[in-house]
Length: 456
Ligand code: BES
Ligand code: MN
Ligand code: ZN
Image (cartoon, rainbow, N blue to C red; front, side, top):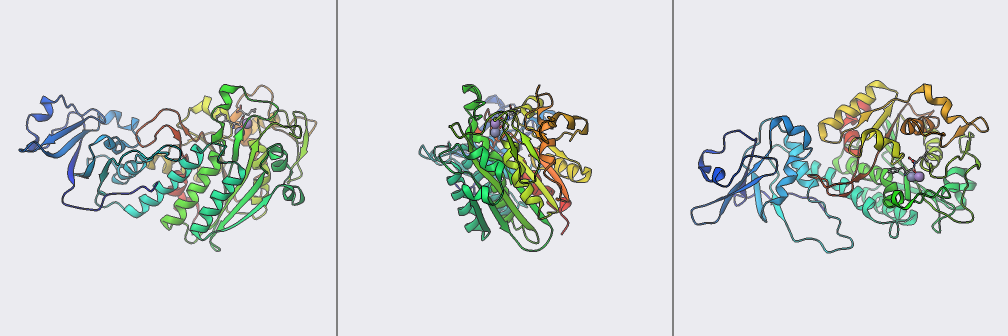
């Protein structure tokens, strides 16, 4: 599904966005009040013409003090009747880009297994907005959502590779994949150990775009299904684990945004995805196993359900060998991140204050919020078990998102700067512009921060 605007036309009906309590357009007369229109967020009042036809509509924005509740207010306008619409005016205090992007994001439907719904209303791109750029951004986000929503039965490591190949081909990017026993030969022992119990071979997907300029490497967690392994998750916790490749899906969506918006120009981009299924079989890795990593650090597996940090560790080591200017991990890494900040606000970790601030500020500005949490050195002893260099699952589980981030940081040396996003990748309850289901987190923040964080 491709996000798009309606072609500009005089026939498009005007839509007025109105803050609660503000004066209404003069010619609306007493009709809105008679209909009970109060400007509540998303409240729509259709305006009839003299012949009983439709001549336009009002939609409420709610009160200005509540505006921060709504990331994408214009997405609510998808409740308008079918037909072409245009914004009659830009409301004060709202960013036209954010409004228009919200409209595009609100078009998303996951249609793979169920026919597409009937055509809804269309919107002419508001003036002063770069429609092509917003299409690139929304298109990348739709790719992310489609990948997350596709169940493991149709998106195992092999099919995730196929999706990455299709994207790389479309973008003219180079792609290499290291698969199965080759992972052992080429020294990716952790990726192999986590993925070897699956009927579908584990693999490392490696995409590159551009060959000069500062280098950005994104590593996305691609656990296509997370049963927990021998430390099996209970049913209720396993239910959503098709989304455990949300980091990979967000990395691919970001690559698509960067390439199609033109923002990739003058950069060396690399996307690395360890793609595995954390499964149960006789050859599964076990609690207590001590594994050696690509970096040479030994890891005691104290919980096979802390698999994400294991596969990321080898991919990060590989990434860091090339010394990128900036490395970013995107991963549905811990339940603890949800306990701390909930599904909407992923933790962002970065030791470089300027980079952290730039990403967080950009995220707030574009409706892709993140919240900074610390790589707290004081908790380092928790990931050191004594019997090996590292423990993948500290007992007690306190500060679980931080200790997972500290584990990853051990594998980032070599990269100029390192940032980690512990994302959720799922919208549990539909919100404007974000239907229930898979959702990208962090990609638009990184895209918007790019001019600050990688100087070309
Ligand atoms: N994929 C999960 C984390 C997760 C769970 C993300 C639920 C979003 C929602 C990850 O592999 C995991 O199972 N982490 C464990 C780590 C623990 C065993 C140290 C967790 O968070 O419980
Ligand atoms: Mn797990
Ligand atoms: Zn996982």
